[in-house]
Image (cartoon, rainbow, N blue to C red; front, side):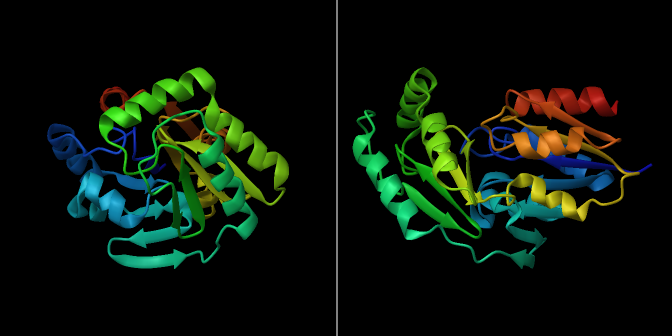
Amino acid sequence: MSTKYVFDVDGTLTPSRGIIDLDFKAWFNTFCLVNDVYLVTGSDRDKTIEQISEPTYNLCKKVYNCSGSDVYSGSEKVRSSAWKVPPSMHRILDGWLQASRFPVRTGNHKEERPGMMNFSVVGRNATKEQRAEYVEYDTLNKERETIAHIINSYYKDITATVGGETGIDIHPTGSDKSQILEDFQNYREKIHFFGDSIFPSGNDWSIAKAIEERTNGKSHQVKDWRDTWKQLEELTT
């Protein structure tokens, strides 16, 4: 029975919005050479390469960027979605930017990617310190969960999930990370999925749940890249 390993990237293989640790990268590259490895991330291709490097990116069998709406095999684009959020969504998000009690705005709050949008109150231009401040604020106030809940209540054909430390991923209903399983139709294959957001409002929840429902599927909640490394070593040695 063949085994497939599927990984989230941000917070799972790398620090949030950060670069992969060099020692872990060397170990992971070797792991990719002897195993079937796939990545699924809300980030776009350029950001993913920035985090893990192009050689590591190309060692993976496929990379499902934008939660699976922009798919690559090495440098070759396999498929991509042209979906965009409706104008009414922009008005709702602009309203939240004005209404949020978090005081810092750094720019790049709405980032459109193939088949999805990422929204952040603090903005994707935030420094590490500003991101940490927002994480503390959001942990206390559950702002992202509230915004996602409102979007999910208002739109029946659009889904919003908490993604990373400061963002919300917005995409057509059904076009979450679980959509990549259309490429894994051989139920004899065992799938291991590793992610840091396997909770009901998290953007790893749908794929983890779908994999757990398979006969040979197993999902692994991780705290960070160190925990991913530790769990992988325990699983494969």
